[in-house]
Image (cartoon, rainbow, N blue to C red; front, side, top):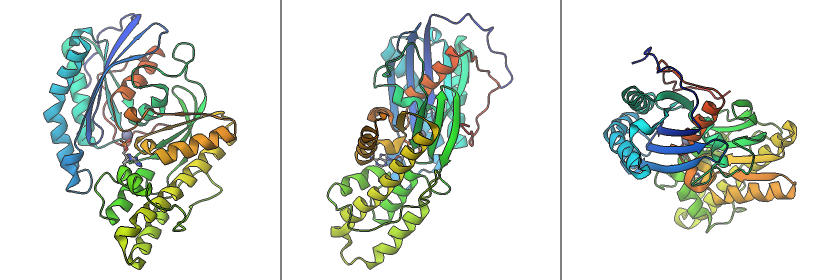
Length: 357
Ligand code: KG4
Ligand code: ZN
């Protein structure tokens, strides 16, 4: 199908119906979003089928297992989404998929499915950046656009995106206009959570497990490093190594695990909060947003919220249901692109290293 023509661009309909597919890693997700004129976008349904149980015994995501399971489940997820929304595929104006970054074999499954649906039902095909989905997700609530602004205008803000594969500080001047001001030079924050959890014998994914343990522990018990102070890039590998060297010195790991987790989580939180505030000041932003899987973490959310309040900044976090990978955020990113004139093309290909800016 690559190279095939899209249907002649239709006049942009007043009501846009978008079906999005997200398969960049280990969640198969389908969502349908409706938006009329300048009204808020409405999530008609958002389905996520997680493969976490399948990957747990390997301690991480196995690409071959991921892509195989996306292709097994995707058709029924699309049918279920259309059913729940009371729609048929020819009611959809645009079929959207994640172009990257992500696992190539997994991206390909969602991309190909969205193209096939577009070709079969006469809708347009468009692909979007997974990280742009995360970045824009704080402006969505679990059912509709949450940001109270005219139309679909996204205000200038400083975005902190923390996921399993990425840790980024982005100055977003408006939707589609992004400037990277900081990123990790080694591990992502979520990756550090997962690796420390593994060292402690906790199951994958490690973030929620560490958070659970940390609630019972003392965050001052161990002094773990806060790397790269004074700049906006992040490094989490030194922190991970510090935990690794500390563990053999502890006699009773079962009783001290909560202290390790609380001290590790505090170190990650301090770094994320201080760099976000610094970046917002440097970029002249009075809004900070938080998104990505790690934004589920209540300690990180509330620390960033408190610091923003203390400094007179607005804080907008992604709703927990939309923090980890989902297709509603992909549909929303596509909606903003389409309302800004994008039409997409059947010749768009996946890009496992697709960069946001
Ligand atoms: O955004 P996401 O679903 O997938 C990627 O695009 O990477 O993020 C997954 C990451 C995993 O590393 C997971 O451990 C982390 O988010 N995570 C958390 C929490 N829930 C998920 N990290 C810390 N605390 C949590 N509660
Ligand atoms: Zn993600």
